[in-house]
Image (cartoon, rainbow, N blue to C red; front, side, top):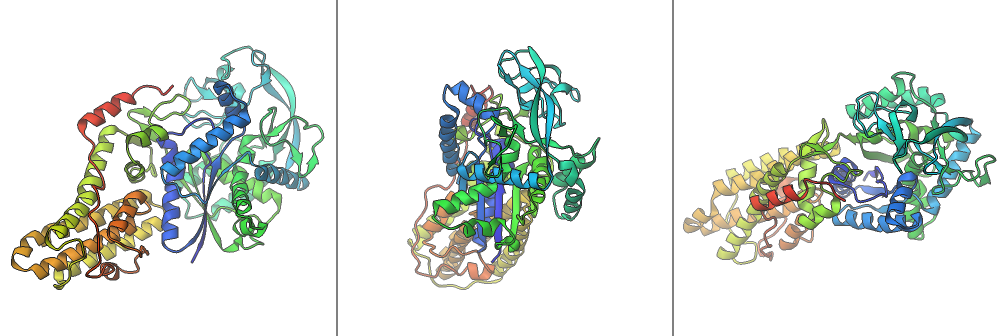
Length: 572
């Protein structure tokens, strides 16, 4: 039994996330967590809401609520939606938690003690209209690299180029739109990432199994232009983790908070402590996942994220961990994703474009979305959500292939043999060929899941569903029954066992339908199969079953056209 630590990039608190956010981190992380648990591994699956920084302050102000109240409410909303999509987190924490405050301050103190923090007097943009310093991301303007007119002062979301506010053409406040900006002096703490560049470079060189997308982004930040830059870790804001050096005050940093990018990944650790504290466990319970001197030396740590988060997880967070000098667990594998685009454009939380998680669940159950998103995951390039493709995939894969197989087998059995697994008859060459085919496909499916090749895994799973349909069509128990009832019974007995097998193997992708299949088959044992032959004999003759309601319904053309029209505009 392996020990697997899984973290998904934590979503901002400011609003409900869209399907592109979901497939870029949380959903594939859940797929992997469910697979590992099914195989018998010990899993700790962590996520949280990212609650600090100006995005939270602005969203709260727009909602007319105190920021702490707004964050508490939105945490419950995001937590509820994650449950709606059946995301199986062991803990969905909050970056505003006392545990994260303490750990963030601890890391800052350790970094300072080891010479990796520098106090810098810098010039920062101040908005006279807003009466405040503006964080980089709340200065907007035109990107000098690609011409995108809504580029932020830290990064252009269109071309992903890292920027400074002074790089922007025609800068303005993203809060008020004012161009009455001036530059003032303020003192901040910087993490000396450049001093850790060689260690980070060597560490990334060791990760020969990482996706090309992950390593290429990390190497670009390490070596392009002037290379890895030192980065500010404090801001002039009211809401956030107060700047302290461990437990002690930090002279000259009064009234400042740590920058959200610094404290957010530390929340992975803090959320695990939130989990252990809730359960009344001692510190050893969370430290065995995070400290190599407390038991984490045998943990495999896997992170999931969209490509825009890669620099922070390959460089900045590892710099924090390495610079602390403590034996914290570093990530072993980073699965990064490209962007999912929406119907000819881009999903956008800030612009309200696309289908959002709450809207999706109002339309159809979670499994429909899980299947499409995972089977079209943007792994090797950006992919695009279109309503036509969604309709075709649901109707063909889920309704015609899997749902139809379950319906035909159970209804035929009920009509000819009753609602128990029939006895009699023997399997033959056709069944042996099916077992051989499924055995090869199971090996491939497991290999793809272990490698976190999501689309390839979904293709193998679908091929196993299709193999059952092909077997049923060729074996034709409805015809055989007229001549040899026992032979037909053997075909149906195997087919009912296929339903149970599909329930087990499909659980990481479509957990609700999986549970329905297993319940219908009366399958108390849902153990991951060691071999196909044994799995196809798990339900004995005489085992009671029920005919499930239609597992998946088809999407009509009228529905698809209605949804396409309804979600063509902007969410307000």
